[in-house]
Amino acid sequence: QVQLVESGGGLVQPGGSLRLSCAASGFTLDDYAIGWFRQAPGKEREGVGFLSRRYGRSVYRDSYADSVKGRFTISRDSVKNTVYLQMNSLKPEDTAVYYCARGSFFGVSGDYDLYDLWGQGTQVTVSS
Image (cartoon, rainbow, N blue to C red):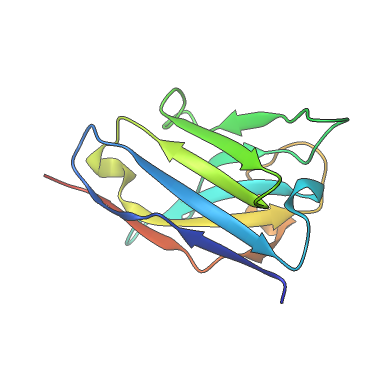
């Protein structure tokens, strides 16, 4: 079955960290660009971070929204067919449902219309 499954969300205090996982099945994640998006109640979906498909042997390009730059990092584990979103120095405004998605394009993009497969989402709540 072709799918993406997110995990790792939860409740964390401001300043804390979480690592979200996005596990792929039914396809090879390295062959696709990956985007992490989030949506808070009453707000539009927002792109958080993006990772390109592999260039050459092990070269990727990443890009982040200004709101998370320097705090969030995307990485891949090709053996586990999983992408991670490491989130540090979390703020209450990071509270949202986080989704990963795959895209069949080269490079990185925050245009969610370019992504053809989405996970079910995982809730992240940052609160004291």
